Amino acid sequence: MHPDMERIFKGNLEWVEKKREDDPEFFERSAKGQTPKYLFIGCSDSRVPASQISGTAPGEMFVHRNIANMVVHTDMNLLSVLQYAVEVLKVKHIMVVGHYGCGGVAAAMSDKQFGLIDNWLTNIKDVIRLHENEFNFITDEEQRFRRLVELNVIEQVINLSKTSIIQNALKDEDPPQLHGLVYDIREGILHNLNVKEHMLKRFEHIYGMQ
Ligand code: CO
Image (cartoon, rainbow, N blue to C red; front, side):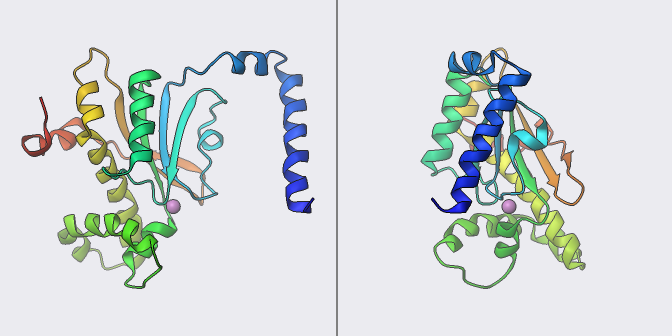
């Protein structure tokens, strides 16, 4: 076996051993099922592991990751995860988690071609178009990059609120709350972007469904 893969199996056995030591019933309990409170929609970037950065244990967080933490209305994968999380698992909180230094966002800011992925990144270019006035005022390139990471998260939370799944869930007594977060890779801190309800309701006259 390749040493890189040997490392994975070795690491796994070490983890099992440690877990059994700390919590002898852990695996028995896990096998019975999951009742996660959270749905995490994050970037595929290897530096943003959902459970580790949030200090949550296995079983606590349902996770969907893709390049640049996008919520795209034709993405069957995302929609299936969302429906299952909301309607079956009944998660209480859904968070879109972006991160500064996101390669997907950086690629969308450039005018270079990267292949098939360009069609995915076009969704981020749409965010630039929606906020072009604000962008034109930010002269510092790094600041512009950071702001686009934040605006992209906010727009993806708005995209979540437009889905029929969330619109139906909002009719429930105790609907899941939507959140937008940014992870700062340099310091390890998760920042809340405080996406407010009025921001989600602003275009209800267009996207609202009864
Ligand atoms: Co990223």
